[in-house]
Amino acid sequence: MTTTTSSTGTSTSTRGSAGVDIVLDHVSKRYPGQKTAAVDDVSLTVNAGEIVVFVGPSGCGKTTTMRMINRLIEPTSGSISIGGRDALSIPANELRRSIGYSIQQAGLFPHMTIAQNVALVPGLLKWDKKRVTARTEEMLHLVGLDPAVYLHRFPRQLSGGQQQRVGVARALAADPPVLLMDEPFGAVDPITRASLQDELIRLHAEIGTTIVFVTHDFSEAVKLGDRIAVLGEASSIQQYDTPEAILANPATEMVEGFVGSGALLQQLGLVRVRDVALEHRPTAHENDAPAEFAAAIARTPDDWGVILDDRDRPVRWVRDHHLRSASSLRDVGVPADLVSMSSTLQQALEAILSTGCVSAIVTGKNGRYEGVVVIETLMAAIRDMRVPDDVAATDPA
Ligand SMILES: Nc1ncnc2c1ncn2[C@@H]1O[C@H](COP(=O)(O)OP(=O)(O)OP(=O)(O)O)[C@@H](O)[C@H]1O
Image 1 (cartoon, rainbow, N blue to C red):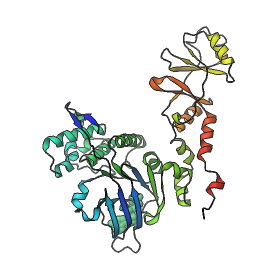
Image 2: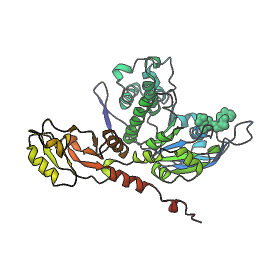
Image 3: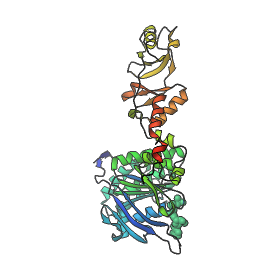
Image 4: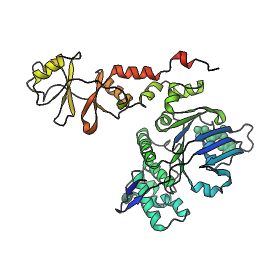
């Protein structure tokens, strides 16, 4: 259980209940008057505490599938269980109060303040007033909004990204074990969207709710999903696996089309610098003698080294020719473009490409020098990610 401090200075505990699993068993939906089913015989399990992303082309049935989980849409046939309980036998209102729901453009009530919007479900559940107030403040903190500033504003007084955060706060306010999110970040600009995605990842790590997330955007699915369900017509499951597995080995042509040509770069975005071997280059501190550093560099097969400040943080890199006439290490070399151990290999590649060097300097705790990641290591990682054609083409039958 985690603890946060509310704006009033009191300490309130957040949730203790983890997410629960969701099982769809042969679920179909046929809208009145439709010849074909919008969702046809879907079976799928979302494990407790996972973020599962439904991704697929427009009209394939993602929203219908998701809304059957909280019964905003009633299935025509099949069964759904949530945390082992038959969702179809729980009164729909009761079910919906136990499932958070967040949609595009936040869906906030315009005539209610932010506080009233967030407090909606706890109020319906008849929580006592003090608890509702504390929870509302806590939720705003959790989504990165200062309650002192935002509690009494109306939705129109917030930016799109802020409204979206409030939408997530409202969906989570009653501490539901399940959160359904239908393209929640579809209406905000790419930068806000990226930061909302980062927030969601952080929030999820903290609260462990089971999340089902619908999007058109495969990169968003890769970033957020523990697993991705790529859906085809009538929600037919084309592939249901981790982002890594789908990127490395798309199961069908349709999945391959969805994954697209950026797949390799996206895969590099899934691996961290700390997961690959680092190399080392000679280092010296700014008050060391240039001649000695030049000699150390000359003893290595590469012609460059890293200058550190007095806290062992890289500041510049130098080639041996920089050092020939240098009287001090304080003013020679080229400012270092750094990546950290938690940077992705995609960021390392970008750093390498932008500096025109064949390596990027890596920092660890407190910005201290850890080593360098070289282009050969990135190339080897890319080769490892590729499934060889002869393996991919092998027909198990
Ligand atoms: N209330 C409804 N009545 C009749 N048909 C509907 C209704 N809602 C959705 N449909 C149809 O069901 C199919 C699936 O729609 P759904 O909204 O689930 O797809 P989606 O994958 O979420 O689409 P999008 O990505 O465009 O939001 C579509 O063909 C849609 O036209």
